[in-house]
Length: 398
Ligand code: GLC
Image 1 (cartoon, helix red, strand yellow):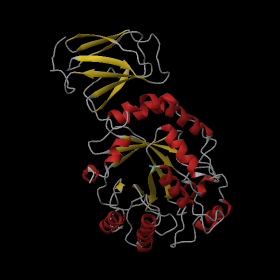
Image 2 (cartoon, protein in one colour; image 1 turned 60 degrees about the vertical axis):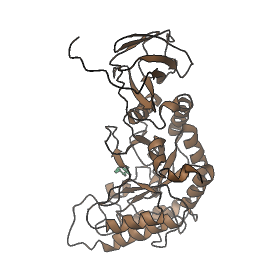
Image 3 (cartoon, protein in one colour; image 1 turned 45 degrees about the vertical axis):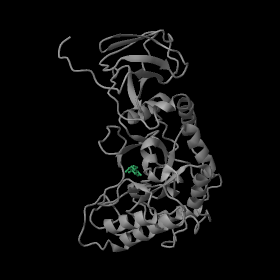
Image 4 (cartoon, helix red, strand yellow; image 1 turned 120 degrees about the vertical axis):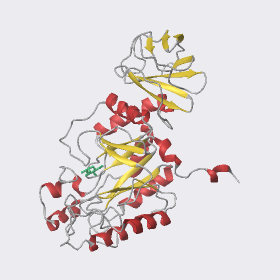
């Protein structure tokens, strides 16, 4: 018997460090974001007409998986159903689904097949709240006059469908769990874990999950955590919104998450016909190039005691190996300090250049580095030290 059975089946999640978030549904058609129904107060009947136009001819989830893999992403999370109530899958609970409207296909099944056959960890985003129900405007506090039960029953039934009809589900990403206290959360969590015992979740309504989600921030958390972040300023497809972060910023965000022992779930909002916008795809390919050289400094990373000046760079640790991620390259010599171990080696990942190490106490100079940044985005230097990396004894004088 292999020792695999002793390994934590959920451990993959906190090694993965990088995943793809996908916001996609009928709201891609107006192209004004996944909140368009709410923001423009569109009646459910009128909004339902979008489903009659939602026929994504260019939807090829294998291309999405291939792009995510190329970017170095290790898991994917697709909006199975957002707050608007439209189901990408063949739900028996409603007619507002892709198979029963213009698409006439179970789009979620195709996504699940693509992930499973291509070895990608597969996750579903699921919004408990559904705007089409009384009380579904989840930003409102609990209202005793509302009967929430039809919406709650739908959530239980739909989650059951999602976790029984699509093979192994690695991750369930809950959203919209307000107002609290209505969801029969413990019963829901017990169902989820009995149907998919190895699943990781970001916490059901009122029940702790396996990790916590930080939306649009990389502050970190003592618990296992993930930051979900947009590439431009929108989750869903908004073609006119072009405020994309640069590749350097996106890699920097990934490094920040990794340096705090967290994951980055980076969002894309595909167009109605199923294509990921070129601005996003191009950036993912560039991140992928960087990951192929520097991924060993990201996957499985933990916090480290190494603290390069934040103006210059950041740091991660994988096992006993420490990595400096330099965004402001300093030329042929790099100075760092507050190093608690003897440094035995410094190596530039992009070029293989071995640095000449000079050390005086906690101060370290790496000489003989390339004059110009070896990587146009962030250049990574691996440091080898004697013993377990530690912080030097604090000295309160200079
Ligand atoms: C925000 C948005 C929601 C999106 C979520 C992702 O809550 O309002 O639409 O799905 O972020 O974390």
